[in-house]
Image (cartoon, rainbow, N blue to C red):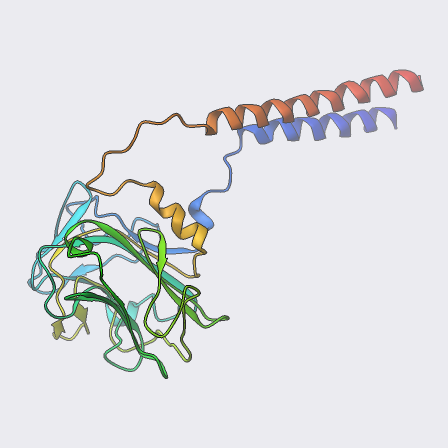
Length: 288
């Protein structure tokens, strides 16, 4: 019995020590559905999340990528086949992308599109002076944020993030990690009821698409780091997306505190494990 007790204690201690070498839970289970980094010039629409949601060039589209940034012309876009549209099943969601335009939009330019022109869906659109979210819902279906900061909001890289929580019915728009007030709402977001994503037109980057030949609202410029999540990211999670520098920024060289934190944690766990072993040995000696 004493041997069994000692063995179990040592086994527990060794398990704790082994946990030092196990990688922590990573972004693999953070709700990401698709990720387009544009790092593969030969397959611009490759889904880097591992979920297999690759996008295709539409007809004569010639979306190119260099240094992880995709360039879109007036008639260029990437889309998923309508019968494979992974956005149809989304109830809660987050769409995020970094982009800059090649000029000031004079009409709707859609870097992110999921089919609002038909029976369901949502689109992020730019037009002169506004950032708009069009959604096929009952009630408020044309949301906008008026650009008061000049055209650099379009012609410089910025990160745009849209979140929707089906429980609270709130939709939010973030620019560079900070929430902005949309028409009809406040800092908490805008109430959107009856929002469905299973429209007849597919998810596309760079224009509106229906897979049957029609396209419009073309985006002209560069897009980087498009991601789709099956949950509404929190404000803190959206802010965390900004830790990766923009394409036009040089990352600051700052020391990473993570190794020190990890070393301290490892030392603490190792000390506790050794204490368990030593304690078990002492207890067994006394029992003898």
